Length: 356
Ligand code: SF4
Image (cartoon, rainbow, N blue to C red; front, side):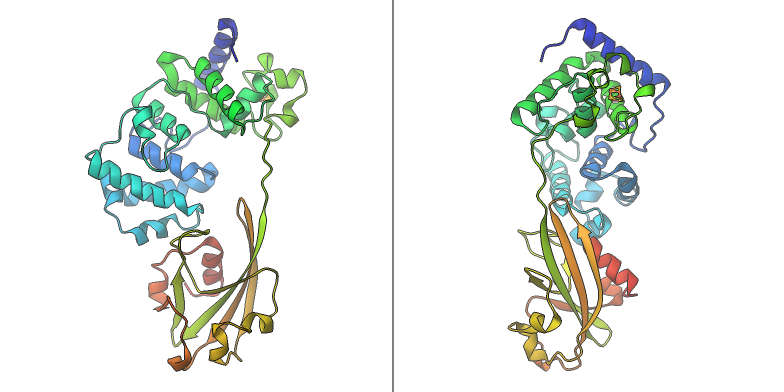
């Protein structure tokens, strides 16, 4: 999509004027020049709202002030700090990248967009953010906020999650970028999308682009930006049996290939539908344990992007370990439990039931 020089200047000048005079969005990583901290903030903010990500950013920069500190950290400590943010692959990739930067690049982040793209977990958006904010490379940063502002302002109905759509928006964002002021422009357009051109009820009356916005004139705000993919949510049913022996409970580490990889959990029986306790116990390892003291403690639901996890929590006291032959896990007491990383739903359960 080609735009005229007049349209480009109008857009960039209006945005720049708003950024200098009316942009009040304040975030601790704004204006940051350290590529490590920019990278941390961007990884934390993927799929996460700024308000939710902020305490994690502060905790990570406090515990690991440099990329070398993060690279040499214990995996379990880092996963524990990440606990509650979800999308644990981000944490795994973050650790891998910290170690590559330290071992291959002497602890110095690569300084160009193209080099940054070679690192694990760094895609076009994150590479552009680091290259632009830390190194002033004139590359456009295109996140969800930018898609929204551009699709509405220029009235583009091509789906933002289609191959052609991604190309159109990336090229348009790049065309609009002022070469000598790219970092400020990138920050401004993202902030405008986050605070003014919001997904619902955008504040068009105070928007610097209102006079040139196609969506307001053509009443397209409600339908822009367009997406083709509807997220299909799979419903799952988790039944956790919390084995208790003296002051310890039995814990297992989740394996690769499913959600919550590398996090911990009690014994899990997953069923295709909600299950009564008798059906739950039939035909599995629990029959050896004479489970007459199993007790339902609580239920919960956790919504992930593509999954809805329905969970039942049971406790079962194990007095005699001679028949206990559940493989792969180990017994942990309360103080050891606090050092392990768990999915959010289990953290809530443990807190509500005074395990920690
Ligand atoms: S005028 Fe409204 S819809 Fe258009 S860019 Fe501004 S906030 Fe978004």
